[in-house]
Image (tube, rainbow, N blue to C red; front, top):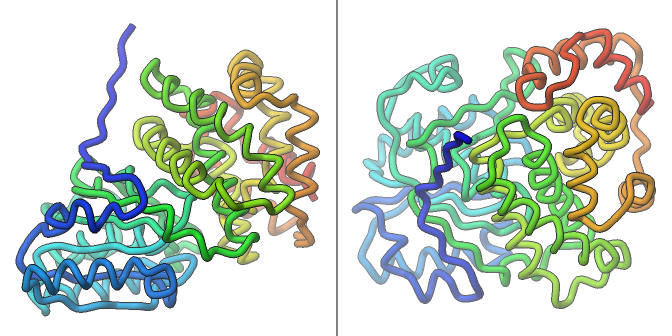
Length: 361
């Protein structure tokens, strides 16, 4: 048996996490804060961060404006602004999009390079990052991965290496208390898919299995209240599952479901978690033919049957987007370019991926 496992991020979880561990947030002498258009302020996370920086007399600048699908071009501009300000650490506040953007800003602030260098992981340095999560979805606070929109190639691309893990992460479920039901559901499904895909991944190990099977068993108990919209009392649990899913994919990466979902987000503006939900029936069918044992193990941990999971997704995540055959051809080609065969162990032929998309539409 051989495997590797690494997560160099210091994690502080619980309500009041920043207040109780304020000194851990200070990673340098000048900070550049990256957050969404409103999430940082609405959640209260931005004011908590500013209070700590002010208490420690740390000068800082704030950018509030990262969208749902951060663009690498914007991140490059923000990196230049952070560099001009003299920032020596980055604070990312938000869901997956601001946290992913913060990782790219940390690279561009330390390196005046083009996106090609970023995505090839050929940059020399990166500023330390403090990640403050305000949703329970991507687990980006516990991964090195950053997924960004790159208009040059009309899709999403990712980068990540050991040095792009956040130095420290704060997970305070109170920041998610004000999230509406649709956002809570979409981000929760993203967290679920990270755990589920990490189990399926060809890179899974006993360490990641321990994390992911535990997370799936807990998520199974939340499926009914999520469907009913009964969110009181489950916010902390959702954030824990998101964190565990992040730890899992930090070591395994994602698989075919994510690769197939990206075009729906880029071309149809479907929220990432909802795009994964739409893809799930085709993904499960593929696993039933190619990875039946791992599929059954994941479903057993979740506590639901194959049929029940498909039915649940169709009830909770209705989908009314249409696609033409030529669109599916492009999406299949983009999916194949991400080579999900390496992690899913299934076909990497464009015609086969096209047939999976056609099954959905």
